[in-house]
Image 1 (tube, rainbow, N blue to C red):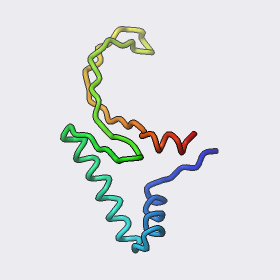
Image 2: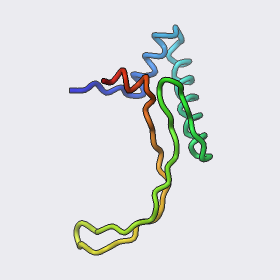
Image 3: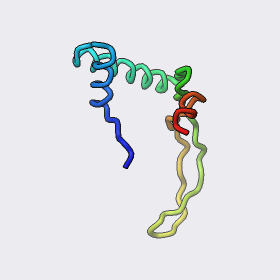
Length: 94
């Protein structure tokens, strides 16, 4: 089974690698995640060299089907967050 890295595990990793106190690492991780969220909310992109790019993609309106009644339904256009892995990250995962 694949390992799951949760937010608390990431905080522990940052604290261990940097020598920060756990509270400081919590604030650092929160600041990074908030920065990504705020940039995406404004319609921007976040590029992390060697890791990847976070961006917002537009989904067009489309027709769908209600799986229970089989009736056609209209699905509104929406914006969704997306991540595209960079080359270095892809190479590590191969």
